[in-house]
Image 1: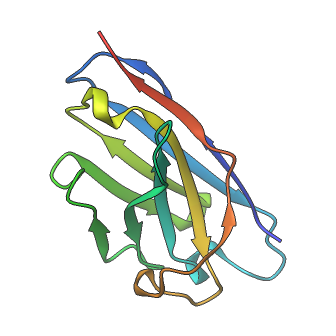
Image 2 (image 1 turned 90 degrees about the vertical axis):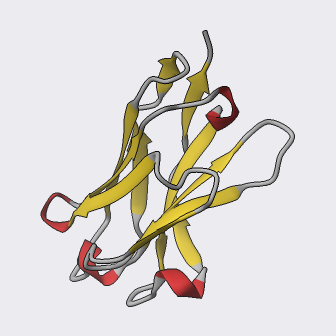
Length: 126
């Protein structure tokens, strides 16, 4: 059983930046490098949207069109942490942001996420 905790959300003006972190714990003999990590968001009244995923080694990443060119995902397996750098934020980026891990040895392409964090609120407003 893994536990994920997101942090770094907050209120920011349009055009601003935030960096979200996702710390993963609960390992026994497993390691974060065994899991792909996805980032999601859910705005009020809307369905949850997958916005990014980073491969187990961090050498591949994909992005939703809505964030491509503005958001960057990264990870540091030694710190058991994934990051989502968000730039040029827009009001429509306002949502609760979640991170999630794949199953062990899973890939982003699987689209199958097993463990989830509780989310962190990002609000973009002037």
